[in-house]
Image (cartoon, rainbow, N blue to C red; front, side, top):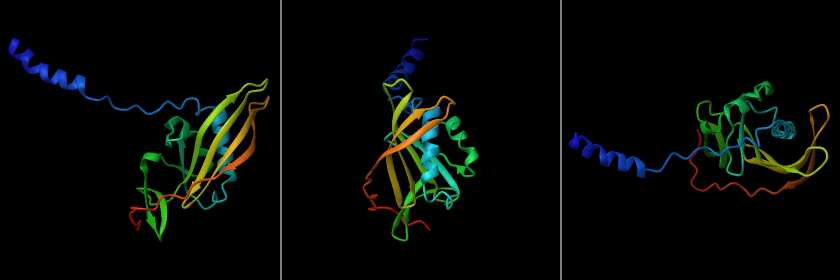
Length: 174
């Protein structure tokens, strides 16, 4: 019995010392009806919407994946919703491309970086959101106000400049 305990002791010690798996950041504050409305608006103003076949949704400043349930809300867009974990980056014709590792298609990527409620009599938010398509991207700051019918009025406040993507070390996409 004592021998078994001595054998298990190093295993228990190592498992206690190992780093826990990093959990995905909780984005429930972004995966709201207001967040969905902002992302739908961003998709509607993307001039490349008709060219795309796929859509990827990312949340937060670190562009983390949206939940499957939240992604499912965009199944009515006519675009194949592709989880961000399936995307790869590479070079094609001297340009950085983000593409689906299975289909090789570039998705429109829509991002909701922040959605901050402001004090007001009507629920009002400041949102920072962006779209990207191949080597093009735009980021905006919006004011989002709830309407009595449950919809949202979304007004662009400003366009935020985006630095060019870093093309160093990208492999060529074939």
